[in-house]
Length: 104
Image 1: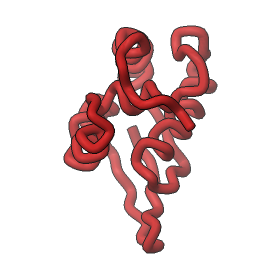
Image 2 (image 1 turned 90 degrees about the horizontal axis):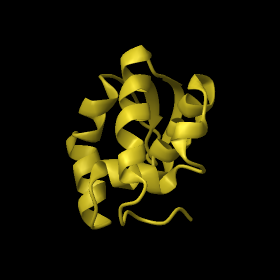
Image 3 (image 1 turned 60 degrees about the vertical axis):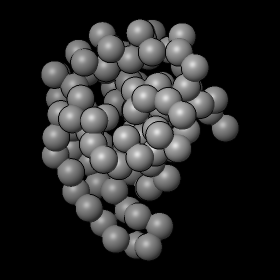
């Protein structure tokens, strides 16, 4: 996963890491703890639809929106490689039945 994050204070940060590592990051752990769920459940809670029905491009856009909502940062230029997409398509649907936060 590669993405640019703009914090509420105007700081821009570029990250490059697998989606699985991003979900295990301190940022996501902290946000998920506040929402009383796991990082995966947090992101799934913000997906607009079931990610199993999305093609690769739609999934990348939906994940960008979900990450933005979950982190309260502005996310742009998100790019998922094949490994990230396979991970998301395999792992995130398992969480869709969990009790994560409801999307606003």
